[in-house]
Length: 220
Image (cartoon, rainbow, N blue to C red; front, side, top):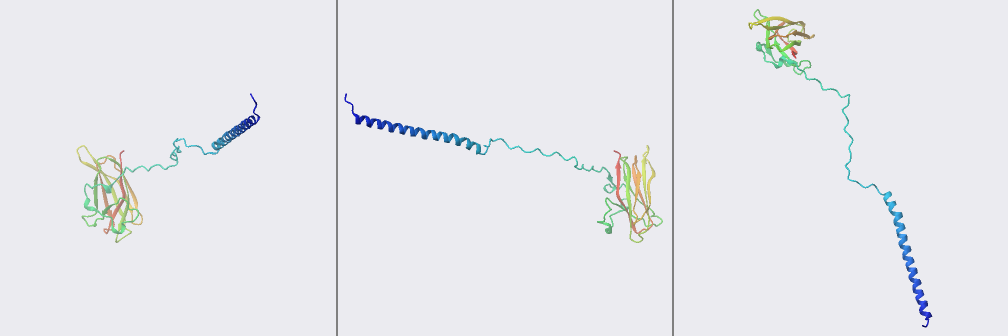
């Protein structure tokens, strides 16, 4: 066989070019892999954390403060102004117009002063208790249109029911010094009383006697 030198040289050149091309491709691929390997951790490291779908937790509600003021207890007293009188209702009146809207006249029971004629010295109003209360209390505030310095006499009389259904009445409390300028309290024990009667006497007939916050405390 004859040796063809030009053909052999041409084949070697093609082989060399193919080898160089393969080397170049390998270098490019290797560089890309290296760059990707360097870039991926960087992206992962610099990227914000992914949302996992877990619900956001809220802080627990604060417990009530130990300094919170307690709720005021509801008064269990019964006001005479909320009761219907057993007798003597005609002696009651509305609060005088001059006193309406004035502070210090809460839950008023207003009794007209007697005329002080021989047959009209005392005005009375009675309330049925049925033994349900212990004490009676009020502030006596007279109101006179003619003689403002006049005094007022108020007496609380309790009626205790006996076995024969009769009532034994006794004085349970008195107030003999109240004036317009100096209101005064009256208190009376009414435990076991079937009835409470308020007696009113006035030095001047031109006026009214106002029992402010007249209340009965229950037996419990």
